[in-house]
Length: 284
Image (cartoon, rainbow, N blue to C red; front, side, top):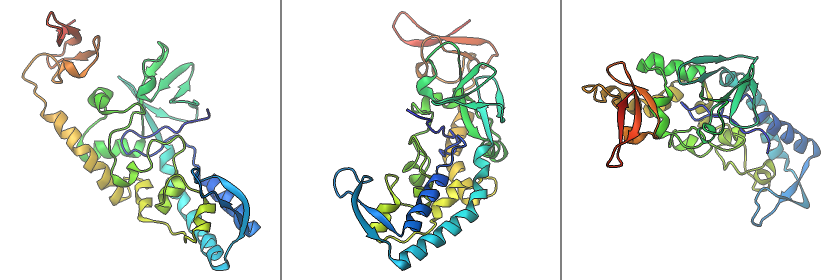
């Protein structure tokens, strides 16, 4: 099945230190060195290559070589994506080099397995329920919104990959795939693509404005504004929840039976089913 990218729950961009753009650029260099490419299929499978070959136009080749140079200048700007936090139900953990990236949905260290995708949270008793985010994204929310991300605050807003419904129209087109499509997002083209198809369609390559959404939000105003636009409503709603009752502010109907949460009075409460088959909070 292979390794699946793990995404930042805050910004919707990959976190898993596997930058597929390096492989894309290597492949493009090979194609340009050959001076020709296999023509893609015109049928159902758009990325499948046929046996027919086509010579690369000189002007197009020049454009693609310039793109590679421009792209190389950008790569250092993506290093922030490698600096990560794991968020458990009671800890904020720095992901250093001693953590091992697992094939699916998490990290491990010292026989502890941190499951970062909601779809696998209840897979076994040995996994630690977690979320993953970029350090810069976490610090942005803390700095601008005075908010420390907690699993319980957004658990019911997450899909099976621990992603929110929307991260903005651009990022939404590329998030959630097994291999995050860095190159295609930067070019602002379909994520199901190939350089052979772009060459065959005589499309010139140019770094698009999408690259802003791959930059450190503590240094890039455009990405900062995108992330804050997503999180301000979430944080504000959290702040205005009723606190005039001893039990937790959130409705028990939002959680599974057995969920335990601290109430506004400092005591622990558990979700139970009453005689009318309605979920409610019960003090433990």
